[in-house]
Length: 65
Image (cartoon, rainbow, N blue to C red; front, side):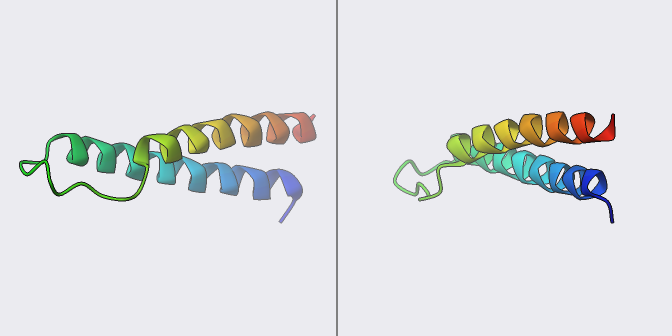
């Protein structure tokens, strides 16, 4: 597995985690009982994954040249 393939695989994993975090944040916003909130900062996690996606994509494209 080349470095570019590894970076693109990590990019896909970060994308999957960003989607999971987005769905979880949406479910948290639609909850019926306001007292039952979670402890995971889904919005922050989603933003971190979006940053990781951008960084990994840029690195993979630079290595591919």
